Length: 548
Ligand SMILES: Cc1ncc(C[n+]2csc(CCOP(=O)(O)OP(=O)(O)O)c2C)c(N)n1
Ligand SMILES: [Mg+2]
Figure 1 (cartoon, protein in one colour):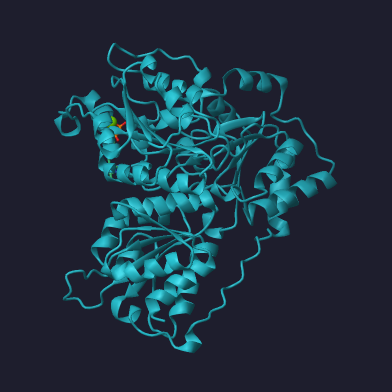
Figure 2 (cartoon, protein in one colour):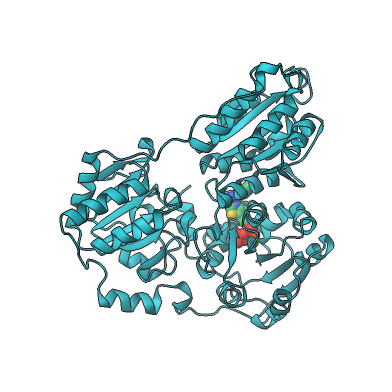
């Protein structure tokens, strides 16, 4: 067996069940071998799309996904998606064919590219070590949660693997890290003191079992429950849930978080987004952080109490200790809090002045109407831009596997491919891709992929015929806006060309055909080209520009 085939077969056997890509001569054999080992190949129309599909798939399936790219230009096309995955610690393998001769047209320094963006560079170096190197790349992705660029030199790919090189034993899964007694004691002391604790759970709390343990601990100490954006939905259905903390927090959620005397981040970076640049942390609040990566503790803001350990282990240990101490407190869970949560924790219960006109719909009106129309079993993926908070805040999701947020690089154009990857990971849910017109047109080639895969997807374009984020950021100061404004684009017509059913929406009544589409066989995806009002900036935009 040749190296290319052995690498593909090895990764398939290790559990890679989806590989996304654009196939050229250099990645043809490895991709076919993966398919031969049982993986599904998804052809994207652009490698940027493929990388983000793989990222979305890994996030929503909790597996290691793969991207397969041609040497040089295939990899450079995929780079933006790779950066997003690397920054988000997505366990993902980039199978990159590689030329090693600098005179080749396809030559770039692929390891340097990987290193430059925070991915882990790896290479298949010989026929005898190929299987072991592929296995090691997989375990790095899986257990260290890294995005690995596995370079596959063309000359090595063609070599015959010797019999002794065909087997490799993968490293065993590491055990969840138990925090040390001192760290737990510090956390318990803070919890026992707290009158108004708030838990903020992040990506590290999406592991199975975390929710129950955090809810039990929160009940013992009277804590309210929030998440970072990437863990949205984790505490759905809990009466003390505040939904997302950060720029998208509703006014009541923000007020309650700001009023906390203890904030505990659970597998959550407590970064400038989640904490609104610190403005959600009250002046005398104690801040604690639990993370199994010691480097994550205090990386984004100073913390008073750091706990190095697995979220579940830390929650379990703290809970046991509080039980032993006989600690039980109503804390923040007062009848008044309960009453205000019922009345207005959701954005859709917050009054607003509708800016709709005869030919444009208010994006909040649009989002609320869609929230009512779309089935609860849904999965929402959101692109970047001024519009992004509307779907993030007004579309509810069933749980933490219902929201896919590829925003670590703040790139526009990732939302559609995120939705494709996520939809494949959660096929029983209706995938909803929420895009701006800029991001939609940047990634339009992947509309073809949605149609070809027959994904029953709803693509909603918040179309303001502009790079709204820039318009609203620079407009008030009187700068010229021609560079960021566009003539109207009929995105519905573009979508029909790809095989979508499509609607142009200027009012809530224009959404009437959505219900029959939902009731139908959904064999053609649906695109909603919503002409949204554009006279004001979204409330989180100022926050976004502060983060530059
Ligand atoms: C790849 C990339 N290019 C440029 C930007 C800068 N940028 C941020 S938001 C934005 C406008 C996006 O327009 P659109 O998708 O229509 O959303 P809107 O802001 O209009 O709601 C741009 C160009 C970016 N974040 N990423
Ligand atoms: Mg726009």
